[in-house]
Length: 262
Image (cartoon, rainbow, N blue to C red; front, side, top):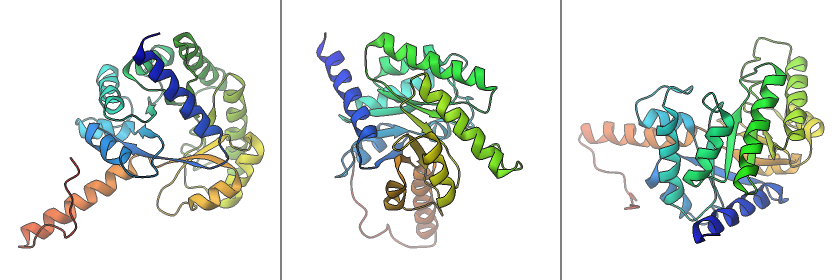
């Protein structure tokens, strides 16, 4: 085994351990090499996750697999090369071939991934996740699959009880074919998170935090394994840039406390 392969296997094992640990894992989403370096250097950061929406936006594409897969994989590779921490890649729905896309992401240095079900028929969604798991097994690492169900994102006009039941059914099915955790994005209240953990499993649910979400300490208490922030970290950065631009054009100065982080 080469030094690179040994390092990648070690990062994969560490990322899996972080998902299985009793402490909740927070992954701050990044979209290029410099954000990976800056976030990775902050004390307390244990792993990184890419945000497909943010990577696409930074290159002039809309979200939703509009960016060519090889360009997305190249971005993942630059991020993985910029940090010594484990990196999980947001691979949307797998760009038409989840297994091959996961294989490419591992080759670029990722040791975990999100794959979306996009509420495809359950059998098709399970096949997506199974293909991702098998591809990772063929690469010989303890890969973390954060299998995403869009039940809540696409179920806003449906009966909430039916949406919850769908998320639980899909989550269990994804775990059965080897997913590590089940990612259920949406603005979820305490009762919903509690029901998801009860239905899918303790330390098996992954969520996104958006403005108005439950605090990390509460999510840990409820049995959530992982929190990510999706495109919101890029929105924080862009909000700061827009505000600084407005202030400068109005005759102001650069914000006090601005640091050279690159």
